[in-house]
Image 1 (cartoon, helix red, strand yellow):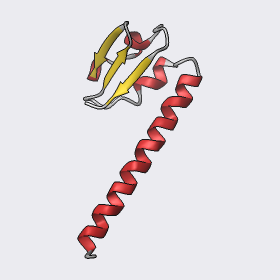
Image 2 (spheres, helix red, strand yellow):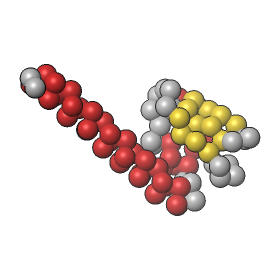
Image 3 (tube, one colour):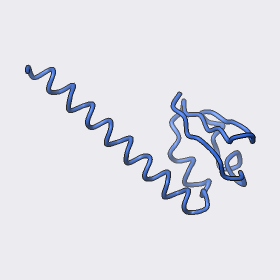
Image 4 (cartoon, helix red, strand yellow):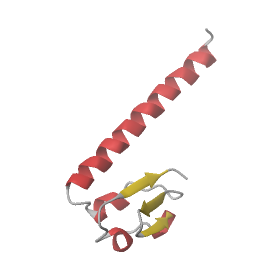
Length: 79
């Protein structure tokens, strides 16, 4: 295995770990009654928030006002 392959494999593992940490932060915020101020800090500029049967928002529209008061079932989707 050459150094380039090793670097690629390490990058994959680091990406997986970053995703795990992001999901853990998101779940902790959901346990805080879906604190909109904290949830919005997790969104990437091209992220999408979708509330099942409620509404959807993307990118900069994922703000505290958009996310406040939603009734629970939701998904965080990658763009």
